[in-house]
Image (cartoon, rainbow, N blue to C red; front, top):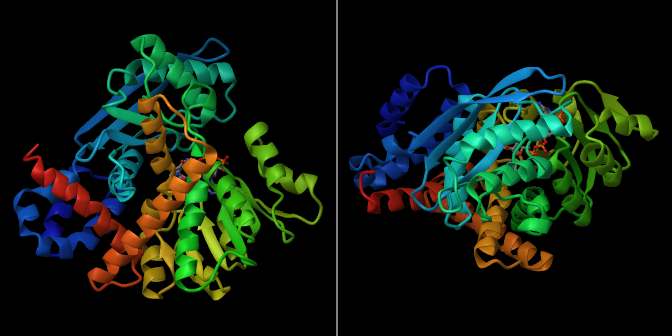
Length: 444
Ligand code: NDP
């Protein structure tokens, strides 16, 4: 980096200690150096300085009362990062690890991801350090109502449309929507990931996992290959992991390992997805129960060791920085031929760089997991029209969007002489549309 080093230095100074955010900004700016050289007008208009600074950051207190009558206080936040191409759009994460660095890294990545979908959505992200795990439904409801009481002042169907993320699924979206409607007295598409009974879109639940596998399928087709007969390892066992597993199985692949934050299971005969869904979606249990219920399954109480399992394809679908350089080397040594990110930034920067250097086909999450937000944007369209498309219609649109994202990232990389580097291609393709829009809208 030459021109953009100064931009990065300023970001580092202004956001001390925000490791995840700085990691995400650095990775993008490194790709954009060539764009800065090609487009001096963007440098002059301060596009790079502006795109790394959120348009708005909201932090608020979330008080609620637990089942024993004790007052609890969490911190809520929403980062409205960039609205150059549409209303802010991005999920809410409820997890004890949530802080401003994590929300800003996610919001920043979301700008480029949303741009890549080709749909009119800006970038944002939010959440809280609230941990839904072990809480009763009533506690989760009271928390969500308190959280939305403040958040409702800042969002709206044409302003900012949050969705789910880690710890925020259909249950939480329901409680959040109910409270928004009560406060504002309006029934609008202010959240996505809604239940099908009241404005949700078919395929939204499956979209991120399915989209990831469609993306990887496009990569495989380019090398005359497919998922058929492939052994696949998927980390996590949440929304993204479960539907990635389902699509891999539908395409003839065999998923042999999945995990949660306590450990991983290895089932050499192939994961029984109905059992995983029963444990994770219905009972909100631990993945260890899978090994307790099924013979011949190995359980290891250390989720980070999942990458030691031999596979053809690895799909990290749990959380950020869960796959490091040693894991990447071990995967490749054991014969892994393709890695596609389902989670946001699950590979450390060193792991991702090394994979690209080794020319191992590697899909960055901001491109390969964009199916979720793309389908959220389709949910917004259906809400505006007060109309619903069929499962097949939405699935076809999702397939088309993932193909476009892949070809756009691939061809952009090629155009700039970086063939095969999808990190570069995704960053540059995602950036160009937002940058040009910011340029045309003046200094705001
Ligand atoms: P969920 O909350 O549904 O699931 C997260 C899963 O990851 C859980 O099984 C959780 O286990 C597990 N997990 C968390 N930390 C670790 C760890 N260190 N090692 C192994 N497993 C771990 O979240 P989602 O599936 O929705 O999200 C997963 C990732 O995908 C996140 O990075 C998210 O930002 C990203 N993403 C999600 C989208 C969506 O539509 N949902 C869209 C685009 C990206 P446990 O139950 O023990 O906590």
